[in-house]
Structure formats: structure tokens, C-alpha cells
Image (cartoon, rainbow, N blue to C red; front, side, top):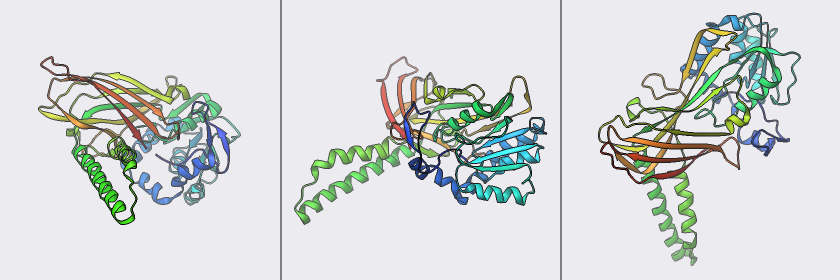
Length: 379
């Protein structure tokens, strides 16, 4: 998550979300405005894994930047634009949709790169540059890679402004899924039960004190609370030992060639195996990594990876997305899973996701457990 590349307040436009019209004013208010605050930028600038990866990718591959033109999509504070200039770029166009552009200009000037870096406030889809660029750099990744759908803007920038010989930073991305154990499954169940207990107290109080029976709303309230507590994915920084099985890739993206249609949906069938003895399958966790490899014609001299996998010492502000099962299932080493995973943009908001996950478990004894299917909301 980073600066903002599109979304001018007050307009209405057709986006790449399957041709769905998006109210850009609402999109700005609900999404982009958060990136206009320095506290949010500070959180991202304090992420050492994020910062080190981009810093190393740029300065260990100066040949991609020296004397070249660069487009920074969603520049935010302007840090990537400044690094590009420090690496020798001839010209850097730094596009930012929010008023954070004003702070970016301040930083650029304070670091004496105002003659190299041009900060442009506006939507990436609407901005016009005076020339094609050699490099497009962007920190576009959201939770589990695709939440926020900012890669749409990067694709637009690439198709409009990248030279045929140009490179993308990052160049590749992958999404991973793995079975996990987590005490959060018990906490969320307890939270849901507590919410329902409170509801029944509310029913009695409303009936006894005010003479109105509101019990007809119980089913709707229960469904609402189930969605919130039991069906909404959670941000978490997992310890590696919470991963109880083999990991699998559910999506690979080549940033040079990917289209909007390629990222509208994620569909995968994977077959992880349990590697932990006598434990609970509490759910599944998703994370991503991106790579800076340059292109086949102009490869990186030093390939850099940024990973958000569970880690003891190198956690990130992205963390992992956790999809919990209620109830959890007892599993043990040697059990095999067949998991069908699907992720789509919600109809109400193209920046949010819905996930469907079905699973069959064949125990090491050969016994096949009843299959299950769950729906989750990544909000």
C-alpha cells in the first residue's frame, strides 16, 4: 500500500472493473483520502522490508535508471521518485492523486531534485506526459496483493507510457496460500457469541422497558454479526510455526504483460499436505511476494525479492490475510487437502474482495472427511 494514482473527487468514470461505472468522488472519499495523511505515509516508510527491497532494487540496478526517464505511479511521499533521481535518472514523473503531492514536492525540493523530479497531482488515467518512459516504478500492492485494485492504474500507465524497451519495477508478483493454526479462531467465535448474548439482552430490555418486540430482527442481526466476526478475513502477522502444511501459489503475475482481465479474478486448485502432528486446521492464510527482475531484454543485474510471508524477524505492514474456519478441523501429518480457491472483486466496491474456499481432506489413513465450502469478505 502506498500513494494514490487515480481518483479525482467529483467525477464519474468507467473503470476496468468489468466495465462497471465508479463514482470517483466516492472512491476518493472512501479510499484515496487516507493516503493524503502523513501518518499513513509514515507507516509505510517505517516498513523496513518494504523500504529495503525498493532501495536495493533501485541502487543495485542503477543501469535501469541512469540517464533514463521514470514514471512513479502513486508516488505518495515521493520516496521512490527521489531514489530514482539519486540513481541517476534524467527525468522522473511522480504522479499522485491526493494532496500528498504537496508534501512530495517539498521533499523533492528539500533534497535538491526539483529539476529532475516533476510531481504531478492527478489521476494516472487522466495524466498526459510529454514523453514515453524507460521505467515504471510503483508500490501498488494491497493486502494479499490485489486488494485495493491499484494495479489497474499501473497497467494503464504501462500501456500508455512505457517504451517497448522499458522495464517494470516490480516485474513479477505471486500470491500464496497455506493451511494454518491460530488462536484467533476461538477469539472470533467468542466475540460472535458475545454479540449474540448482548442482542438477547437488548431484546428483553426493549420489550420490558418500551413494549416493543424486536425479535423479528434476530436472524438478520445474527447474519450481520456472523459476516463481521466469522466471515471477514483478518490482518495478522503470523509466526512461521503457525503454518501447518505446504504452501502453494494461487496466482502469478507478469507485470509487463498482465491485463485487467487477468487480475479481475483469481481461481486456483491446490493440494497442500499437512506437515504438523495432531493439530487444528484453523483456516488458511494468504500472502504475496514481488520480484524486481527487469525484463528478458534488459535483465536486472541484481534480482531483489520483497516477501510478506510469515516471518519472525521480517514482518511487514501488509502482514497476511487469514481466512478462519468455524469450527476448526483436527488434522495431522500426512493428511492431504484439495483446496479450490476463488477471489473476485465485490460488486459494491471494486477495491474490496470476496473469497470462496472449498476443501476436501483425505486423512493419512485414507479416510475422506466431509467437504466444506466457505465464503469470506476481504474488506
